[in-house]
Amino acid sequence: MNYSIALSLLLPLSALSASELELQTAFLPLYVKHAVVNEGVEAVHAKPRKVSFISRGAQPETTLSFLNRAFKPSHDATWHEGKNITDANLISMCGIRLSQSSARLENDQYELKITVDTSVFKLPDGVDLSKEVAIDLILEAITLNYPGVAITLVPAQ
Image (cartoon, rainbow, N blue to C red; front, side, top):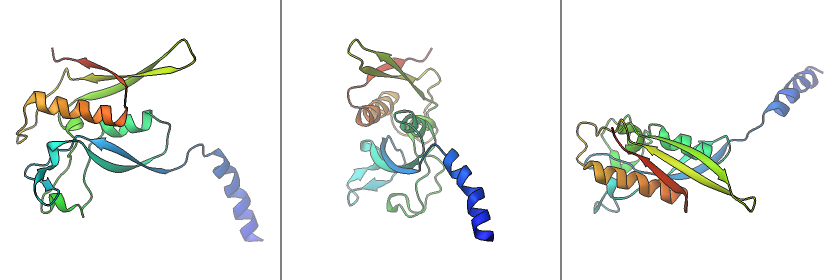
């Protein structure tokens, strides 16, 4: 009897939940100084890396939100052993903000547009990349996540 009461109380709550948790992957422009992959022959920041994240929302908004956030690698990732990393995502490390909008086309299609705001761009201390290389890695990651997307770059003041 008690189980049926508890179950009847939980059912309305589960019906209100409009989203599911889902494992997604995205390409991130990662930077960890001296970190290497592929048997020690390639720097982590040589190209955007595919990482997993938990999603519970609509696309493309969820992935874009993930790209804007700090990325702390899991403790068992061998390419950063012994390093205390609080953020390895070049997008958030450099203060860049990504936003998206969409425009309706004539044939009931939509065109996704992503704005890359670099107006407050700043390379953190210890990052030995040029501004141009960092921005190129970020643009490459966006293109890998959203093939064919229109990208607008807002330059620094």
